Image (cartoon, rainbow, N blue to C red; front, side, top):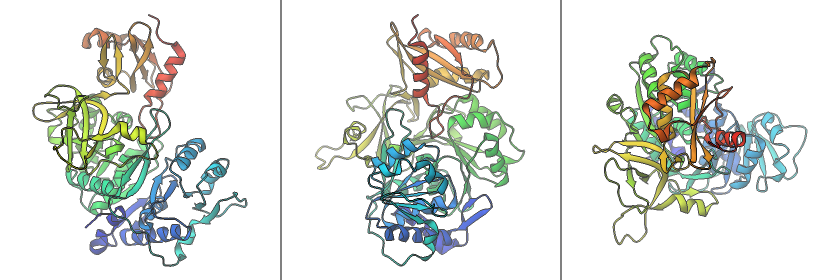
Length: 528
C-alpha cells in the first residue's frame, strides 16, 4: 500500500524494475536505479545532519538528478522544497529563510548566483553541489559534492507517517511575498491516485513534464507517472514549438500546460498523426479560452481534452470529462475522486443552483496550511461548512477565494478569483468573460482584462493585448465587438497594445498584478 511519497517508486520494482521511470534528453533511468539513487541521496542528507522533517531545497532546472534530489529528501524522512529555477537570488533567499532550509541542492553556476545571499540564510548549513566544489568557501556552510551519494554509509531514515509534511511548495506570490503551502505525504499520494484514476494512466504512458516542478501542477506530472509506473519525460523548453517537437519525438501520450502556453500551441502546426499517440491533454491554472480549445481539438481530433481546476492549497479540485466538453466547454467539471466540492455563501450556507458563491474543497487533498503564517492559514483554512453537529474535532477545508456557480446537474463554472475580480459601477466583472470575447475574434495572441483605479467607477476595465503582427485597426474592432457582446459596465474603457508578450509569473501564468501595477503607474487611474 502506498502511504508515503517515496513509496510511489516501489510498486514498479516488483513488476517492471527495468522500465524507464524518467527520461531527460538521451539519458534514462529505470525504476530500480531511481529507487536506489533516491535512497542514496537520502542517506547523503542524513550524513550531512538532516533531522526529521527538516527542509531540503532543490534549486535546479529539470534533470534526472533533480528528481533524485527531491525524492531523496522523502527517503530520508525530510521535507523537499523545489525552488523554481527562474527565481532570482533575492527570491530564493526568501524561500530558504522562510522555511528554515537546512540543505540546499544546486549546481556550481547557480551557487555562484546565490553566493552573495548564502551567508544570510540563517539555517542553511550544507550545500550539495551537482559538480566540482569551487575554489572559494562560504563561511558557516559546508559544500558537499553530489557524487558522494555513490559511497555513503548505511544509515536508517527518520520515521514518518502519511500525515507528516512531505513538501513545501511556494505559490507565485500574486499578493505579497510567496507563501509556502505545506503538503503531507497523504496529500501527494492521494492526489496522484485521484488524477491517475480519471486520466486512466497506465505503465504505457509517456508524460511530458514541461511545467516547473515547484508548481503543484508540474510536480503532479511526476507523481502521477510514478503512481502507475509510467515514464516521465523531462523538458526545459525555450519555445512553444520545442514542446510540439518533443511530443512528436518522444511519442508523448499525456501533456499538461497552462492557458498562456496552450494559446501559443494552438496557433502552431502539429505534425500529422500526433493524435495517434497523444492520448490526452490537460489544462489547469486558469480557464482555457473557448477559441483555443476549439483550435486544439481541430488539430488533435483524437486527443482527449481534460479541463481542470486546482489550487496549490488542495492540489486538484475538479475536472471535466472529455465527453462533456462539447456540451459545456466553459465548465470546470465536477469534483475529482476522493474530494467534495461545495459552493457556499460567505456564512457557509449552500448556494442554490446557478447562484454564485465561493468554492470550498474538503477531503484528502486539503493541505496542512501555510508555513510559518498562522494568520493567512486561518483566512484560507476554515471548518467544513455545515458539518455534522457534535463532531469533537472540526474538519478543515480550503476556502478557495474563487467565485464559481453550480448548475442543476452539479457541473461547476468558474467566475473569477476574488483578488482578480474587477468591481466597476457596483458590478463584479470576471476578467475571463471579457477575455473570451477577444480571443474568439482571433485578432491578438494574448489578452488580459485588468481593473484600473477610477475616481468615479471604482475600477475601470482596461484590456492589455499583444499580437506579433501589428494591426492598427485591431483595438477599434475589439471595442466594437465588446460593445456588441457585453453589457455596458463590462466594455473596456481603454485597449492598450503591449509591445511584447504579456509578463508571466514563475509558473507561466499571466501576471495580472504586475500588469495592473504597470497600468496604475502609467495612467495613475483613468480620469474619465
